[in-house]
Image 1 (cartoon, one colour):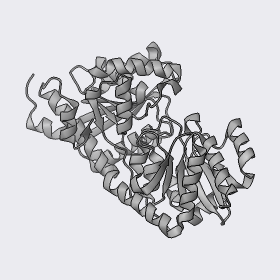
Image 2: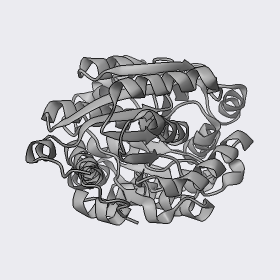
Image 3: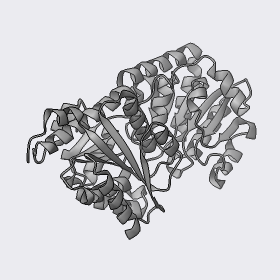
Image 4: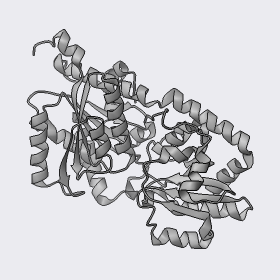
Length: 414
């Protein structure tokens, strides 16, 4: 193979085809969109294109606004089928990307299949956004997908994890540990920032009373988020004489299920809980929340809401799932999952700190976000990783270790 010309090297990494399971609201999808937007703003030689396996979702408009071409296979969840595969190969064959980047388990496997449509050897990276402390809690279809992914993982150039804990858990399941690269999530720190006016905005938007602390959780309506545990914890906090209100926001939260409504009926008065569905204005009112809580029972790797809350100067309490405790650092407190008593104690402890001490904890979280989770810095790591992988492929370097790619990118191998 001929060596790349200087002009070709300067243009790297070129066209990066991202293949994601969906573009609905979710942590992985949010990070993908932020990465594309940061890339577009910097004009740093990366030309992204995004292909979603499922029908166009909520984030499609943002990608198109940034000038990123988007494609969809129009698939139903869990049913790839031969027509979807043919579309995948046709679109990839048309794009002829310089690098393939999968997102989430289905998107990762699709990226592996898409290699068949590229006329030359191009780097293949996966992106895993889920922790795996106990595979038995996953659906049997998910476990089957994980087993297949583990077998195929030795054939990729690198597996990006946003959580060191998740990387270790996947290695224990059988994913090739030598392929692991750690790049945490990033956040727009000019959008998510402390705002003295956010409190009034919060009260106005959600029609909340002026009295009492506001404890907010922003997460989709899913059993892994364990909203019931948080409701029980808030009930205990209120029963101890502390005045607090619970704000539950996220996709599906405007239609809470029977189990959650039963827990609220048992633990809280109706006016102590406010529900809201998916919202695009979280940054506008999140700084007005007193405490952000996250009660996930499993599955979290690097929860976006923790980084967003920290960027806004809001202290957090989260279950110790994935990298949550590491993410928060001095900006919050972690508790065991599924433990309402521990969650209640931590929330009560933050309530008793007083406004000044909570603000100091929030400021520590903001400082940590600035130091480690600025989206511009994270986008640079991705760009360098992509450029390194493309350069080695163009030079015919053969198999290059993930640790070498990570080192050149300023990321971390695991």
